[in-house]
Length: 497
Image 1 (cartoon, one colour):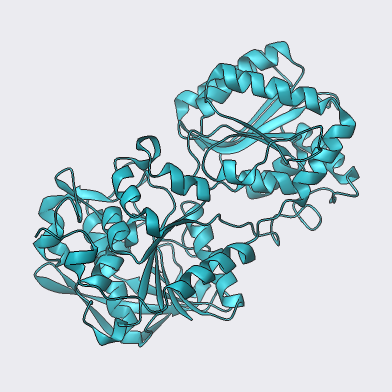
Image 2 (cartoon, helix red, strand yellow; image 1 turned 30 degrees about the vertical axis):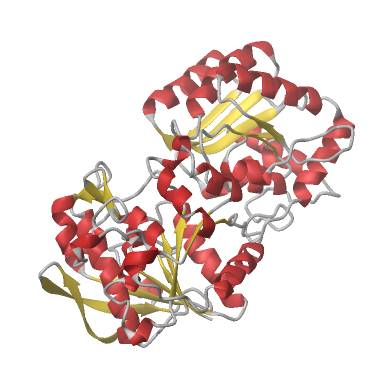
């Protein structure tokens, strides 16, 4: 199949979060299965021409915008093995230090920037002669592409066999902008209503993508269910419910070439489920690095996380205060985020010297050492569309304790000491009391070394690779190979116009 993977960021070109990792790993896994996959993204200032071997392809790219037309260039890179990446270059829109913001606030012209990108991607596909079977769009920045495919390009023979897939990585970000900018899209005003892009008297890019895509995916089965509820749907719960028949949860995968304690070059010692001596070495090195007492008896707990309200880190800090007073345990934190939550952890380090270690920021080698050194990994997210650290932790023999939400609920199964089944622990209510009691419960199991060894082996044998995820996407793509071109007015909710 020909697959155009449209994204606002992709590793190693530009990255602000997990979307960039997915936009590298999934296309690469699909390419390994024999598909012709092309990545399309903006050419930001950080995408270095020399490092990534960028070269101009084709002539100037004319991109419709409002009543006029802007001109751009298409650049090509083959830096990712087996993948051709194309970049829409326009210095005014993308020649900036940040991708979406200046480090403090979102760019005020983000609507115009990504309208330009979406329409530019459609024109680039046509100019390059790459007629995709699948147009795979990701998050709000690409939400207009399915709309364009079904409206402005609905009668274009070049796209007659193309189907649109919209992936929601985090519904908390939707691309909501003032109505007065709608004219820049060149879309007919009949699509601006409650059954289209209108959203509380504004326009919503993600909503458009959901309604016009042939299929919508999100990054775990549980999150697909949660999106249809008011708590997790962020005012789009009704829209997600409306498209539930074409909404699919496909859990992200792990790159085990990078995250594997048997081969990890960041570790002072390597280990496997059958030879665990190296984990003890990693544990002691982590304690030294984080200024902790070398104490084999103390459960070593920790997190690698954005220190934010969404991640439940405020509740974790409050629970740890009582736990550290009552139980002989240690805790390490690697992350960055909100000052008011960090102050809670800093106070714990002051109150419990030698038992709490903090690294503020992100350090790739240290993140691997944390996973390898921990006994217990804590992930109390308020919501978590997929989550990867719980899967990294299992591979490294750090037992996850997670809130039963999104991908955490899908990938972690509760330990049952009688049947010796399960790979971690889950809890429901995100309260200080519930988290305190769950961690106390887990520590009781930690003290039973024989049972803990069985649990740890189960966790290390869990596997969810990108090859697994790619196979599920491939099956979905195949089901869309012959999209039915119904009139837009009857299939996308405009029956009464």
